[in-house]
View (cartoon, one colour):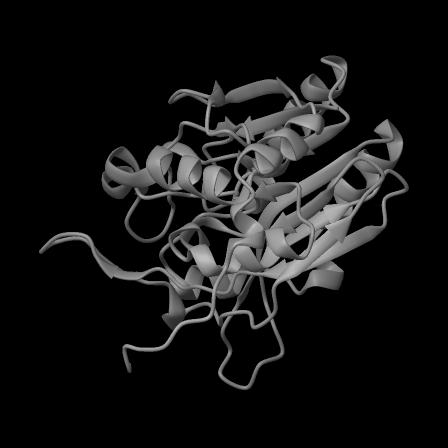
Amino acid sequence: MRAALLQLSVTDDPAANLPVTLAMVREAVKGDAGFILTPEVTNCLSSDRAHQRRVLRHEEADETLAALREEAQSAGIWLLIGSLGLLTHDADGRFANRSFLIAPDGSVAARYDKIHMFDVNVSETEHYRESSGYRPGTRAVLAETPFAKIGMSVCYDVRFPHLYRRLAQAGAEILTAPAAFNDTTGAAHWESLLRARAIENGCFVLAPAQCGTHAAHNGKPRRTHGHSLAVAPWGEVLADGGIEPGVTFVDLDLSQVRAARARVPSLTHDRPFEGPDV
């Protein structure tokens, strides 16, 4: 299976972002990719909650989702939409950060709502409270396809290894980790975290990313790390998308999953233990 990681630098305008994303999908199709992955918040990256309420849509009305489903059907490819920011009907008005796996017939094969919210203080001047705008998901998702079982995650999830272990022990062979990873923490931790998740689970990890400084009509512009990565089950980095928008191809040999797990079968070596109390 040839996969393609799309590295984007989206703005806070979904209508302006969509043609760029579609053009990259078509470039990936021309490169013979059968599995194409986009980053987190493919439709809109913004830190302005009022602006998000104006431009985001409910799932059934989201133009990015509709267009990418149509594109997947037209090209006959599997497409992971890393995530979309979406309105919900929640009483508190918070959004969903939702990843979609689209089948070659254009149907939604799986949905996953990001579980872990990026509520951090990167520095004295750089603070994030994702949970102020987005409500966390509550369910891990394993999707079955003809070429692999896929465990879905989004960005900050990568710091929570128990999620990936649950997915791997349920049968995941590919772990997806689309991201809009902070530039500061990305430089320090991005590659190390992704390689760790691949090694400890004997899985491919595919992590399409946002990159660069994101133009914003409202609110403060964000900067993301880039470096979309594909990591093999033994921990080797197979492809790195660098720091500019573009398409990165990688050929996946799923026999490497079985080989890595045969060499170090740690997924079957968990032991019960006691303490400490928390």
